[in-house]
Amino acid sequence: MDIDKPLALMMAPKSLTDIIGQEHLLGKDKIITNLIKNKKLFSMILYGKPGIGKTSLALAMVQDLQIRYRFLNAVINQKKDFDIVIEEAKMYGNICLIVDEIHRLNKDKQDLLLPQLENGRITLIGMTTANPYHRINPAIRSRCHLFELHELTTENILTGLNKAIKHPMLNGIKVTNQVLKYIAQLSGNDLRYAYNMLELAYFGKDDHNLTMEYIKSITNKPIFFHDKNESGYYDVLSAFQKSIRGSDVQASLHYLGRLIEAGDLESIYRRMSVIAYEDIGLANPSIGPKVMAAIEASELVGLPEARIPLATIVCEMALSPKSNTAITAIDKVLDDIHSGNCGNVPAHLKNPSNEYKYPHNYPNSYVVQQYLPDNIKHKKYYEPKSSGYEASLKEVYLKIEQLKKGT
Image (tube, rainbow, N blue to C red):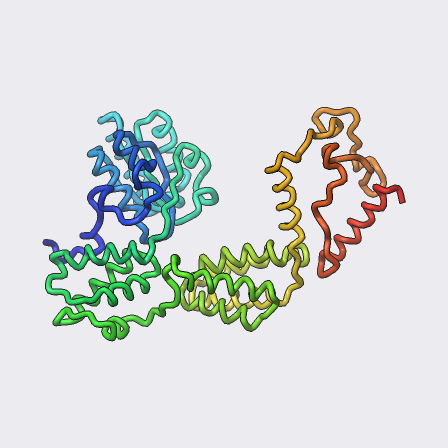
């Protein structure tokens, strides 16, 4: 046994049956399970947070299929390393190339790979923590199937830890299920972190007796609600949004602080982005770009400094005027569409049409004409409020309504 290898590496799955979690891809009759059963592999991109098993899944697939593969990193490996893989693919007819951090693949390497993906010499498995729809070159993305890996639950992490304590590396370990669960909760759903914590604790104690007090003494990481299947996690996120919606700046900052203390920046970003458009909306349209600027600043500086732009924008969001008219309007539209209440596009709006009146040819760039289908031409989806920026939109809205009535 090589004791220089970390526990997380020695616990790496050797087969799909060793993978923990990801039941939506690996359960009975699920897509990846069936691909491997049918001995067929397609180019794909695996994406999701760190520590949830992207590398493990990629390696397990090629090991189960017993196919030739190479593992490269989009940043660390140079163009010549990709050239070597391509030459090997030409020699053997096909090779699977696993590429970590594929969202950082530069243009030279992309241009090198694309024709090989086209002719089938290379089957690509890309891995990334980034959103592939935003960060991966469309030419690469269009040639791959995208699979999102879900975060592991506390039970998933516990399963991994219970396997780990049986490994020869941790011979003589003494640990209760309560302590293992505490480590799992500390991990923030990151299995690699859990393994590393267990390994540190084991080698940091001569008698290998891992008590709760001992674990708490070697980590200052707080535990709030890392298990995202437990109600506490959703309760804090819900309270965060509802406090901003309710214009309570003190409570908004409190729940922001709890999220920051847990290091859960991504949940903060997502929830603030939703709040900006769902709860503030047209009452203060500038809040959306401001939220994105605060997110970018937070990403740039990282914690602990990220707390500063986040606190700044949350204060402004809490004290901003609120409006949900846009989301209410689009939900009414979608209800009509789902119920089949749509109708045909008016003839003068079809392309081409000689009956269409071009608004810019008329005073104030407005001319009365029908835009909705006949059966819903009098439908009112959007009803403006009289507060914040939306009050000015309401003025325009009412003037247009008067013009339609000829008054």
